[in-house]
Image (cartoon, rainbow, N blue to C red):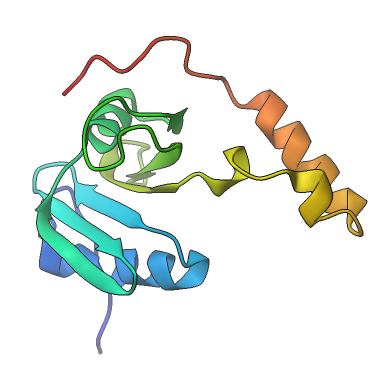
Length: 139
């Protein structure tokens, strides 16, 4: 039976289906890597790099936490991104996946004006997410 298995040693080929699913779901650039192997970068429906890592992916794996930041280096320099680790059953990071953080770049009230409950939920989430105070130092 076919399946998808992601481990800390998954190759870019092995994580590509998961990264592609995220990319197609959100129609946003997506990056992903496993803890011990380089990964992929997808843009506009194509895998533009299958030997990819980025500073925020690496930091999310080290911290084992979600990171919202604007990198000052790498392929997404100056672009808001959000990266989260994928964890095993014990909570250890095995991979990280990131997307461009469009929530930081749009006026939610104008886009979702007819849906105040969505605006309220997003604004509450933004308030509860710690902001990065210092630029990233791990490259």
